[in-house]
Length: 350
Image (cartoon, rainbow, N blue to C red; front, side, top):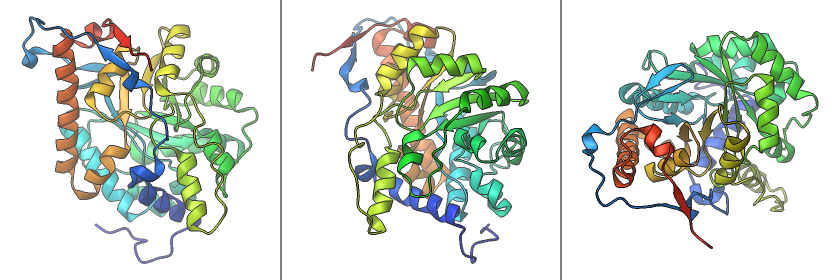
């Protein structure tokens, strides 16, 4: 069903979201110039695992909900008609496979209520673990508990992501750059919101020190979203270039690689629920991330093109990724995710 605003002019925020989606389809344009760090690791091959691959158990619990695999479909888009197609296809695939999903930033729908339908996927995914999403910096620009509740209620979410995007906001022409005092405001949302709060970077990683502050603030999970995947700095630089503005590449390689962020946080927060994202491109990447300490792994950009076609295409891509996780588990002799987390990795010298 087409959006009610299909033939009306997009708001500035909707237009920005549309540009983001279009740019993210071209991975060569927006990928970080350096990898996630996961490619530096290898498993020790087990030639005699004494396992049947069909008996390998990839089920896990995330934020109190049982999932068929430790896979979160990352927050990507929303706010306009094509984004509605993407979100519904992703959600339908998550429903079929028993996975979790986050939606893109819902600020656009708080500002323009007619955009809410582009985020609403419960019709096709009544049972999935669904995460709402707002930028944490908006807590310094008039947002508070009411807007967080509206984001959750808008889509019938089980939890709320507060995303941290300092570098993106700093270089975005329309960016909000006041991050002062946000730790206390995040703590207030964690205290008063009825659902769990997840803190997520968008591609620059989270340090151990910041993770400790977030844990003390009350977040229930941290998505490290390290350097190595989609670079929102590159996205904004591409937007500037298309608009004929000068492009600064000084921060093209800024951030903490996914592997380093994950290892550092796990060392100081052994009980925190961690999601590994940022350059995750395969089931093998996910298996490595779990062996390094992640509870879940997430990816988004590789699913974008399939999601523009159909839910079936997304299912096919995700089945392949989940099977790769099982192959990795078979080849190291890990019967379940607990065993995979105890499996050592070798780091190759560069």
